[in-house]
Amino acid sequence: MRNVSYASTTRTLPFGLPDVAVTLGVLTLLAIVAKVGAGAFVPFTAKIVPHVDLDPRNLPYYAARSTLRMFVALVWSTLFTLVYGYFAARSKRAERVLIPLLDILQSVPVLGYLSVIITAFIALFHGSLLGLEFAAVFAIFTSQAWNMTFSFYQSLKSVPYELQEAAALYRLSGWQRFVQLDVPSATIGLVWNAMISFGGGWFFLAASEAITVLNHSYTLPGVGSYVAAAVAAQDLPALGWAIVTIAVVIVVVDQLFWRPVVAWADRFRFEQSAAAEAPRSWVFDVVRAANVPRLLERAWAPAADTIGRLLSAATEARFAPRRKMGEGTQTDRIFNAALILVVILLCAVALRFILTTVGFEEIFKVFGLGLATMTRVVILVVVAVFVWTPIGVAIGFNPRLAGTLQPVVQFLSSFPANFIFPFATLAFIRLGVPINFGSILLMALGSQWYILFNAIAGAQSIPTELREMCDDCDLQGWRRWRRLIIPGIFASLVTGAITASGGAWNASIVSEIVSWGNTTLTATGLGTYITEATTKGDWSRIILGVGTMSVFVVAANRVVWRPLYGYAQKRFAQ
Image (cartoon, rainbow, N blue to C red):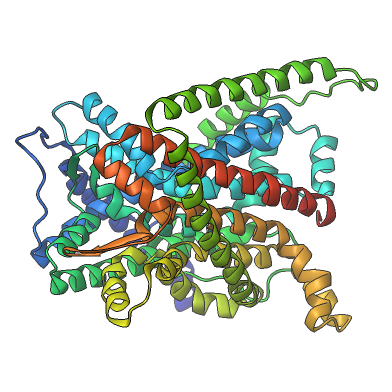
């Protein structure tokens, strides 16, 4: 009896070992952020320029600086996703503007943003390194946000009809619908796309930390700039240490952040029967066992309830009366006409600028370069869909396999492929591989994972009871794919193909021109054109190259991907 009483007492203690672990972990994290973040506030002038030392002992600090930039960009990307994706999905008029604009934003390469913003940020934070830090974070943000926004938008457009009807029946306010239906229904896909977007940020880290734009070179302390310095110095040992460092960082981030988030997101499955085996995370288990998070949640609850009531009152459900046929179309016509007029004016201004600076001959040349890059993108997407879709479905359908392979997939997708570009350059030179073909492989290393992660997310979103029903009906092979898998993952797969193609276009700026020391391999393509124009500071050719890439990406989205989106919503909506 004494032992039972003692055990019962220890279970009800308000503070135990999990609470100690959580408290110490949070305090340690805050201390590291404060220590590393202080480096962003040092002076920065023409005479005081950050220097990257190739001593491997500096790599832990550089890795911490880079990781902090990645997470700051992830926070802003998430906020942007929730706001932008919501309005694009819930407002027909906003959708006509925001989705084409998102297509354009996705198609603009990172160097295109840096050419415009870096001078502005330096001027805004004059005399402080914070200007360069904001420019680097913004560049990483542009490599994360578009994919996440497309995922959230697609999830909101694919919410099952019965759940939408239930929300209307219970007269949920806009805020209640957002937090009780929209975000939960999109969580699994958003988490997986956030993971691959985070990996995409690593890919462009070197471009954001060690950049040459408008004939000026800027360097920020970080593992990306360390790699750039090692490549310029042809220092293979330093490059090896950088690869080991980034590998360790990816594993640590996966264990301490992504695996807990995936385990938490599993609670948002829309199904009546539980998954055979839920994702597990030792960090998530420790947090759930601790009392501190629950105490903080109870302390925050009154304020959260007050904020929720205010937002619910401000977004109260309104039911518009039925309109007769033809009513309201006049406003839509005016809105569409205004949009067309704005687009025509912008195109006219851009065309006038280009014609007065480079001429028609340059336009035809750049269009041909765009066709060359587009051919590489098409080959990459087609091959990646056929290779990674079956693998993604297998991982998504098998929680045990997902638990085993998720760290491997996360590591491969997060590992910045451009870190091994110098080795690929040496291999291409020694094996005689033309860079026009080799660049396809380099582009694939950074963008094929979008398709795999969306296939996994789509497979995981298929309710377990539907899979069990197919097993009972003995649906196997192609019949199972045609009746269950393809309808279940089609919308997610389209999202993956869109973001993979956009990522491939973006990756062309670092894949079509690679170097090792003084040796540079240059492919024929639009990425090379934009990179060279950005390095020289040739504004007319920067605008022409970026504009042409935007036209190619938007045209592909309008002609191919958007019709597939519409087909997915009409044909495969649950």
